[in-house]
Image (cartoon, rainbow, N blue to C red; front, side):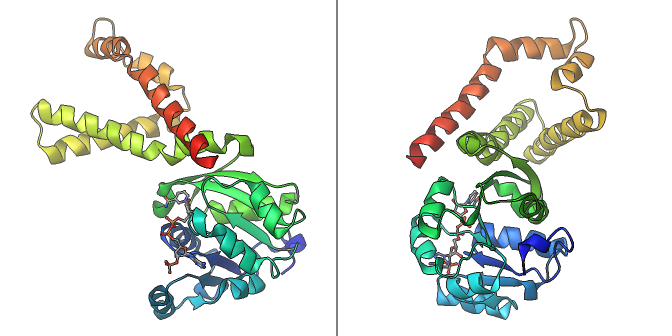
Amino acid sequence: MNLKTLSYNLMDNLKVGFIGFGNMGRAIASGLLRKKLLSKEDILVSVKSSQHKEKLQKEGFNVLSPQEVVDKSSVVFLAVKPFAVKEVLNLIKDKFNSEKLLITVVAGLPISLYEKILGEEKKIVRTMPNVNVAVGRGLWGVSYNANIGEEDKTLVKKLLEATGKVFEIDESLMDAFTALAGSGPAFVAEIIDAFALAGVKLGFSRKQALEIAMETFRGTITYLQKKNIHPLQFRDTITSPAGTTIYGISKLNSLGIKGGLIEVIEEAYKRSKELGK
Ligand SMILES: NC(=O)c1ccc[n+]([C@@H]2O[C@H](COP(=O)([O-])OP(=O)(O)OC[C@H]3O[C@@H](n4cnc5c(N)ncnc54)[C@H](OP(=O)(O)O)[C@@H]3O)[C@@H](O)[C@H]2O)c1
């Protein structure tokens, strides 16, 4: 399929390849199937181990070599671990022509590395998904190389939005995105746990405390989104003079919780940069 015709019929006859079908590859494919953007016949998969190949074949997936996947697909997701990338790119480089689109989900590797091995004229999309793509509420940081046109971007967005929200970002912000959105869910989980522990300390059962903590977060986010207001405006509406909330907020600030959280994310950012060197 020629990607230049995509505006006419975005998904028609589209074959999407996956090199690597572990946590991330499978999560993306599941989203595409769940949203009925593709059927199993449109998906071509390559994995390493023979056991996994057999399992996928039993599930009805078309399992091929990396070269065959590239040959038969217009869009190829690269979802192997970083250490396997160079080997895979060298395997597929002869099949990967300028019409095809490579969407890499591999953390830490720059677009320039793909261009160096596949060729500077090739279409490369670097992404950073977070774990929540597995439940259809993920986040995607996405950077394009210079060969990606508007129609390619439309297609990429359509494919990625099957599992979450897409943010087009400058590649220089990938480490920041990794810290905020990639590690972010783990920080949120810690904060929810702190709320739940406080609930247990005040007398609730663990189950009830956790449910109350999670619903407090879910409800607050829903409120902010539905009313479209800034979090601090929302805070002021529930902070009555000399009431319970202002006492809690005063403590939160004297303990430096907000500044501390900013530092937590900065720390993850620094580590992401270090790992990318
Ligand atoms: N997991 C996350 O939350 C997350 C978040 C952001 C980014 N990422 C990135 O996503 C990438 C994949 O992570 P993952 O967690 O999905 O890893 P994973 O579960 O270990 O999956 C890796 C897959 O690559 C396959 N593979 C390895 N070498 C191959 C080769 N030469 N040819 C074809 N397939 C090959 C493996 O095959 P077998 O199944 O046969 O072993 C497996 O299916 C990583 O680069 C990571 O940086 C992951």
